[in-house]
Every structure is written in structure tokens, then in C-alpha cells.
Image (tube, rainbow, N blue to C red; front, side, top):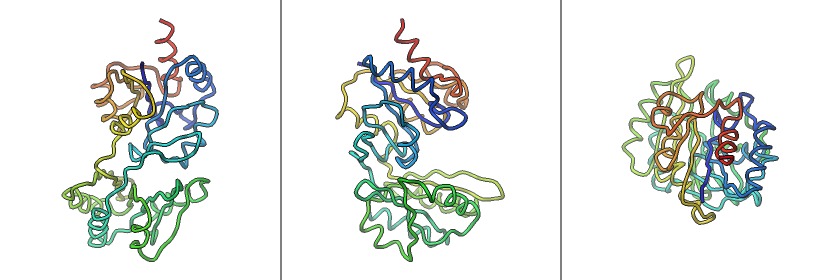
Length: 273
């Protein structure tokens, strides 16, 4: 049995960050005929649940780059890879050293909470304003993180600040075993850092699906660097035509553009042969 696994942004979603009606129609027909299809994304369930409305996915989906495996129908996490408490404390200590204010993502009883103390720059404030009214994500301002870390499964950390501070802190955190950190430069000299358990990846999330589905052959679809672990695991891996060149270089092949229903059209053509 084959399992098709698609990234969302830049892959299954179009330029409007939506699943097009055509993609929904094609994939629903394919899944109704027995095709096994699911999602592996960096997004949380707070946005994914709404994005996938009208798409009849019955298999669990992989969220937050493998941090969670989620049952869409029951709206509950069935697998969570949280950051170990002692690792969290060491990372928070580095944040204090560099005077950084993180946002901590915690899951409690299948609800997603984002804990923060202060929003100290425009990037953090903009991030908050765009997401604070999300239906399935609750932002909570706290005075300290100790109780939050003790009471929740902490799965992700985000930090916005001056890029040089972000870079210096990230280089320090890279020496801590059990954590994966990535960081990027932004406009106006700012930077962005994201952290999660070193055990979490899209590949490991897909491996966890073996408990819930029967498949022998994995076909993956993606467009960016965070899809590399999935591409390494997959028996076949296809980059959309809009994907970065680094991903195309390791792909089995290149399929249609994400704004032209590339993933759905490829699976349809494959099953018409």
C-alpha cells in the first residue's frame, strides 16, 4: 500500500494559503477510492483544522514538523513529543542570559496555549496580533514560566529579537542535547528563532503513522528545507515547481506548481495509469 504525504504551505496550499476547490475535489475522489493521503506540516492544529475543512482526510496528520500527530476527526493529539523539563530549564537560562523574551507553546488536554511575559519588539507584536484571535490557540501572559513549564507538555519555543542576539543565543543553545534550534534573519535587523525537541521531525511523525495505517511505500511532497527529513524517509519524493532548488536537487522529480493543484493533479495522473 502507498501512503501519500504532503506539506501544506507552498505545496498543497495555493498562493492564497488555501486548499483550492479543485484540490479538494480531486483528493476527496481519490481518498474515496482507497488512496491513503495525509499531511505533514510545520503548522499547529490551530490553523490546520480550518484550512482542511472540506477535505475528507481520515488518517492522522503530522503537525509542527513532527512534534504532534493529530486526529482531525476527534480533534485530539494522539502523539506528542515535548521538550524534556530539564532541557527547557537550560534553554530558558540561555534566554535570560541574552535578555530574550520567548513565546512558549504548551499543550494541555488537547488545547494549545502560547505563554509569554512581554512583547518587546514589532516582530513579536505583529506575530501576536495576527494570531491572538485564533479559535484553537490561546495566548496567555504570565509573570514567570516556572509553573507553565511544570504543568504543560511544552512543545515549541519562538523568539523575536535583534538578529545578532538571536544568532549568539542559538549558537549557545546548539550545545544543549535534546533540542533542535533554527534561526533566520528578518527585516530591520531583527531575527527569529524556533526550538523543539530533537526527537521531532516530519520523518519521525510519519513513522508514527505506522500505528494507525498500513503502508509499505511512502510518497512525499514538499517545497522547502524543513521537508528534507520527509524526503529522506520517503521512497519517492516530489518537489513542486515553485520549490527551492536545494529540495529539487534531492527530489525524485518535480511536479506542478502549488498554485495549479500540483499535488492533487500528480496523484490523479498516477492512479490513472
